[in-house]
Length: 347
Ligand code: ATP
Ligand code: MG
Ligand code: MG
Image (tube, rainbow, N blue to C red; front, side, top):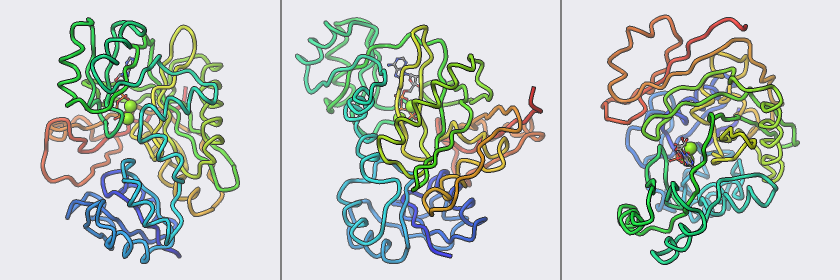
C-alpha cells in the first residue's frame, strides 16, 4: 500500500496510524518532539521543526499523501509540502480554522449562527466592542488556542485592560457569552467524491476549558440532531472538505450556535472506537485515501471519559471499560493521558 504522512505525532496521530495500519497503509510521522506518542506505533518518525523547510520537503518526498492531526501547521510548511504531495483535508479548511475571525466570518457567511463577535487589536477596539456585545463575554486569541488556553472571561467593562494584558496583547476576538443549555458536537466525514457520513451527535462536558466527558446519545430532541448533522454537511460541502471534521455546537433556546470547527479527528469523537464498526480514525483514513466511507451508525450507548493528568493513577475504576492510553511518560496537570469508553447496550 501507499504511505500516509501525518503532521503531528500526538494521541490523534497515534490513533490515526493504528487505524491506517489495519488497512495496510504505512504511516510516517512528522513532529517537533523527539519521542511523540505516535512514534511508539509507527516505524518512521521525523523529528523536525515546523519551520525546517528542508526537513519538511524530505518528509514529503518519502510519502504519497499528507494529512495532519495538528491544526496549527504554518502556511509556509504547507506550501513546501503541497509542492510535492497532496495534502488532505485542503488548505481552505485549515486556514479558516486557524484564525477565529476567519472561522466565524466563514460560518456566518454560509448562513450559520455563531456567538456575536468582534475583531480586537487594541484597547479602544475592545472598549468599543464591549459597548456593543456587552458582558459577560470572552476574549480569545485569534490563533493557537486550545483546551481553553488563550481565553479570558470579561464580566465587567473595567476588566478590559487586564484581559488584553493577560493575553499579551495578541490579536484577539471578543465573543458574546452564549447562555447554552448543553454543548454537543458532530463528527462528520466527507470523501473525495462528496459522499458524507456523520456520527451521532455527542454531548460534551468541559471542566476548566478541557473536555472531560462525551455522552452518546446526546439528550436532545431528534429534530435538533438532524439540524446539527445537516449544518455539518453544509460546512463540509462549503469547504470541499476531504476527511473527518469535528463541529462544536452550543444548544440554546433559539437553536444551534456554532462554537468552532476542527479540521481533524476530534476528542469528542473517541467514543466511536467502541460504539461503531468504523470509528472516526478509520473514517478519516478512508476519506483521504479515496476508499468508500464506512457506515457510521452507532450500535451502543457510550460514555467517553478523558483521563487527564493524575486521572491516570485511578485506572482501577475503569477496568471494565475500554481503555485507550497514549503512551505519555510524564503526568502533567491538564495533560490528556488517555481515555476510556464505557459501553452500554442501546436503549
Ligand atoms: P478546544 O479547541 O480544545 O475545544 P479551545 O481552546 O479552542 O478548545 P473553545 O472551544 O473556544 O476553546 O472554548 C472552550 C469552552 O469554553 C467551550 O467548550 C465552552 O464550554 C466555553 N466557551 C467558549 N466560548 C464560549 C462562549 N462564547 N460562550 C459560552 N461559553 C463558551
Ligand atoms: Mg479550539
Ligand atoms: Mg473547543
